[in-house]
Image (cartoon, rainbow, N blue to C red; front, side):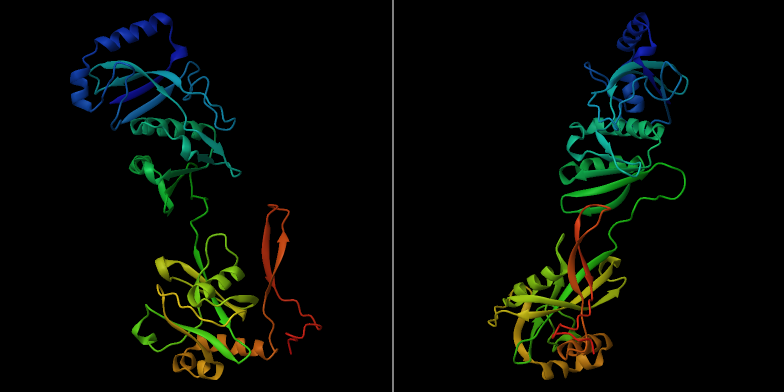
Length: 367
């Protein structure tokens, strides 16, 4: 079966009239039954798999004479086309419908980002529009296509996958799909590879460490008292995340001092890598109020007793972290402090963590 898209400008008025006449007189009922194509009186639409399709214009190209441009963000509705459908050489039928390019904008890397708020209301119109848009973007030399489908438009996901789109990532409210047009390996950036966690080492003037026991743990950690830990939130700084996690789990207010160390591990939850930042915090309050959702118990524990725990002494990672924290308390180690900087590359403020050895700093002399 062959499907041809004919530019309406390439046909004369008499030809168009003849086409419409032949369309109305064609045996649609039997055609619909044989190939699964549905027609309406207002305009004819087709659904199903076509073995061959071509886009023809008066100039002999494979695009309409006046292509809809996503670059200029033209809000043209659609071009009118006459469709010629041939089935195994047994004759052809002609009908017309409107086909348009999906609303989209260009990204800075030669790709296209489809507007998720301007997707066609009618799900049946999405497949032909997506097919036409891909052909249009290929002719324009575009590279990567980003298609964000909101949760409420999830019925469009299998349509996009059928056209060759692949999953990129998903959040609570949407799924992102991508399509790479050029030949060769896909150059689109992959999904986020890391999760970021923080731990708060809080010690008071009595040399007591703020520790917790979690409600959910592996049996081997049943007796372990550990520092408060957790994941930072989206767009949250490391130092504010550490302060927040301590407050949520224990109710204790703290002030960020330094990043003492960080660990980089791989193939953890969901096969993601993990960055874990140990932060030294100064307590601003002492009263403990346990988060009953995650924490079984919390208390101020003498530093000597905390360090002497078998699980701390037997674990190389835990022991090294504690050794670094003790060195910092003895002013023999300097951690990392965040400094706000702005890059000319993107004009955005960000935090750069680094160590400045200041001989006037009585809290850290680095000796």
